[in-house]
Image 1 (cartoon, rainbow, N blue to C red):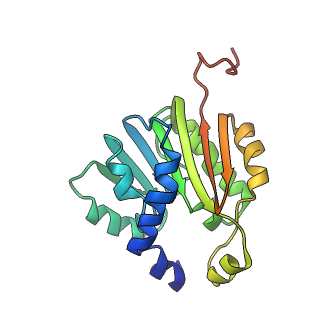
Image 2: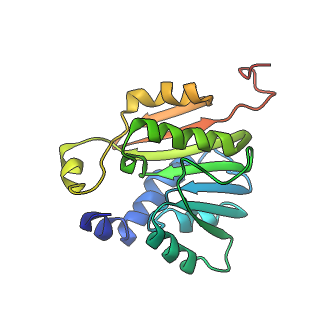
Length: 195
């Protein structure tokens, strides 16, 4: 995480933006269920809000320092912090009711690795489960903001076929000041689910 991220992504203003402009909108018509997976929480800007919406929140963070800080902050709560790559999750198939990744996919260096993370989210979701997410839109300003850091923005037009290829259905993608998405893992009773 470069100095810009350390300053902005840990600020109360960033957490408020995620809560008011992203999370509240994404979850307005979505049932997160009881058990949720948060992918790449970083400094935890979304974690505090999410933990009050589910019975148990598991957050997987690849950065050991960030994970240790989150583990300390959320000790003895309904949040479990795991250190590891979201591209290789240590959870069985069909473990979570919901999963989310918020403004982190552009930190993943390749599209193939982004797809692997999305595929793992699909795998660990229960049938009927939902993936919610957001990411920044590419811009020169954000490119400059990420100087010395990984910056691989998600192309919104590619997101629908990528999610469909992985098996997600009932997909909603919104492009505004950012890109947000909601994608469901089909349940056997869903009309589009292959029998």
